[in-house]
Length: 268
Ligand code: PLP
Image 1: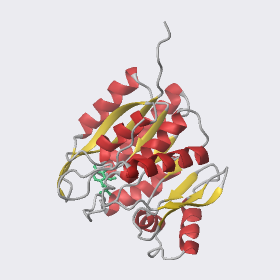
Image 2: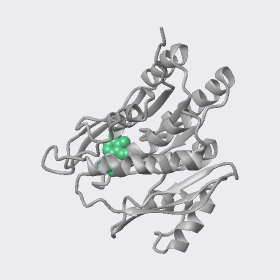
Image 3: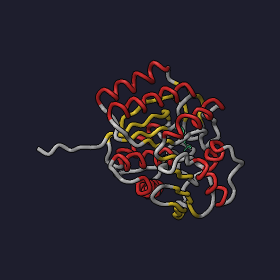
Image 4: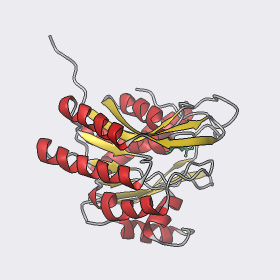
């Protein structure tokens, strides 16, 4: 019998009770790209389609227990991190990533540095920002900040011009093997414009912006789709392009749920 196989992708991220973003979006995107998604939940959010109302990080014991359980049975081919809760969680995660590397060999890491929701709710204090800069960004294979997050992480003023974005990507590339994609999901305009800086390729990835208010979870889905494509063995620049196409299609199939922003919907 030919037993179907799917590469395992871990998403280490926050739960969105509204089902639009976070872990819930990640698992849909990973499934859409024919991988098996396993999740390490860093924080719970009480949120719906209009706002984030409460955030509570899980205990460090529970964070480590999830990693322990997965490491023993479901080691990852790629990992994606999203909302991390706090700096202490980030440090535990960095330790787990190193331990997994030693036990199972190198696996690509996609870091989506979620610092705030589109609705404005902040998910990161200064300690977490600093921990990203010092410990997690240097370990990333692919980094997917939006423009606001990229500027904060690079310690730059708001990015207005293409030149600003390109300079910021160079500043966030800690070593030449890394890929940085600064996404334009937080911009307006007729084009969705992401800047890609990778060992294989660099330049602007432009697609017509899908005219929908229902884009909740598109950043999470993009980073998860990149991790899934990497788990299948695609080089980073190809993984980014595949993920951009998958999210574009997901936006075309997004739908209303609640009175605010409905979710992007990636399907196989
Ligand atoms: N909630 C959680 C748990 C998330 O991880 C994220 C984003 O990454 C969001 C909310 C915000 O999603 P959006 O920016 O699409 O509103």
